[in-house]
Length: 344
Image (tube, rainbow, N blue to C red; front, side, top):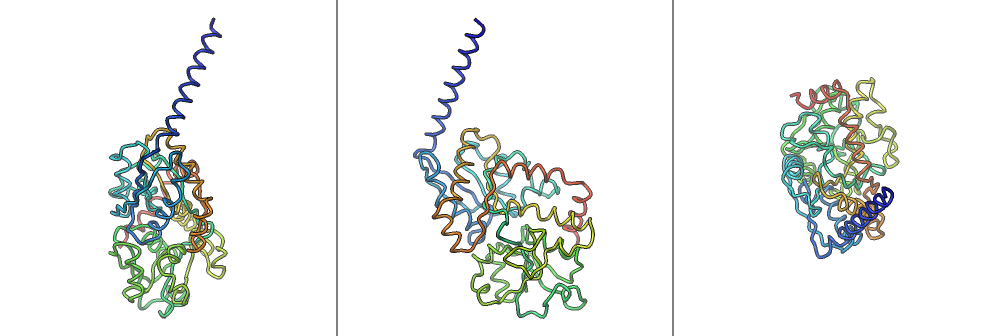
């Protein structure tokens, strides 16, 4: 009798799971998914987002349509806060954050009112496998090497976004660790605006990813108008810049290397996508699978190759593990990181 009851319960459970799966499979038919981008139009994040939505829909049962909305503000924190506490977790809205948003709660960043580990992580389009984050300057300035930037006298003028982010963090950490004579001029509204400032000579350089340079300043790359001082995101030199040292390569102490490793963790999820906490598991799995499938799509890969941008995706489950790793950072490293970012 007990065995019969167990079998009956098992059969009912299977029926319920099959019905749930069938419902999930049909959920997106005729629907529209909104992808919110926490950065301005025209930059690297925006490009990755729009390239994704041109492909991802055909890997979702029912082939829903997509719309992209830029919702920039506070370096991505406005969007992160909204997705965390205000967005309905119905599987119809997900977002693309700035790569350093996930570490901001750990750092006690003002305005970061979310817990990164509670998001539904969809994946990242890039883990910097074929990319690098660089300290880049105009080729016509009188600074040729890192040693030149360490000398007293006129500082090298570097630009940063008003809301902060990797461009600001990397610039300030490099200045501290390598004793660089630089002045950071902040206030630019977006990556495209900062690139224009470099072209006009308002500032002489910035920290930026190679993929963003490929999409934002391709003519300057082609014409050799930029010089690379240092690269981040790898312990060993990226194959695309074999003559440019990595930050960890020239760091002098274990403490400096630990600081740089924390600063570089966001590059493992360089183009991160996530949904609100608590969306139905069946819908989350559909989105995560479609995300990864889109990055194998021939049209997606062809477009990425034409733009010379990195495609090295990582699944949402793997991103969730990285976020947990971030939360386990030693307090002393966090304290030093914060002290550098808040120094004058």
